[in-house]
Image (cartoon, rainbow, N blue to C red; front, side):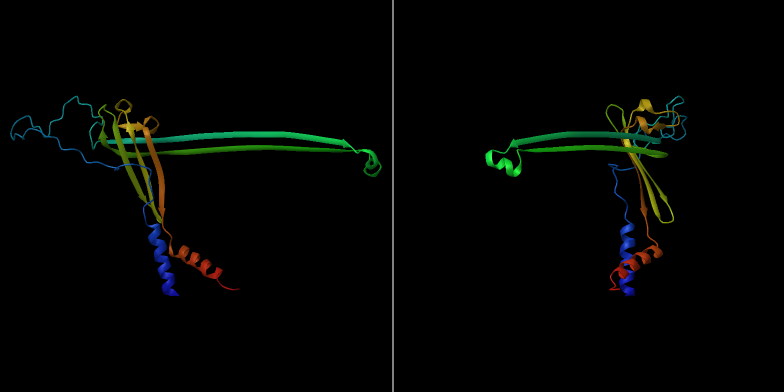
Length: 215
């Protein structure tokens, strides 16, 4: 019994330790590409490896550059619908000759059907925060494909925050920050990988075995 309980607990814990699925496509980080340059000239005033133009724009534009995404996603949707119907019918006939004295002079029938249906749906989502992303690809028109992931380890598991999308250089603000509202093809997700502790596993197994008892 103890061996079976321990094995079941290990299976549950192993299943909860896997990373959650993701909607973010492609890698979530990229290393800067090596740039071919002239050999360094030691002793000279100008050194190609350490040269930085005085008035160079430090805006992210190369693979491996970093951006800060200000996540401010708020969506609200409502839907309402209604339908109704009404249908009536009637029929009557007169009994002929001898049958008139038995069942009466005439018979009348009436029927009616009514129905009404209504439906209301609403959804609201609010997701705010910041996440650092990396430029993973530079498109021919200059737009940047960015992606990033943040993991926060908690007591019972790990929280995953992932982001990917396409950024136009014109929307990059000071400090290399971009609002998620202006990111095209944005994919934002927040998922968690919770782990069951011993007390929760024991409680689950106890309920399972107690449900199988005949009394």
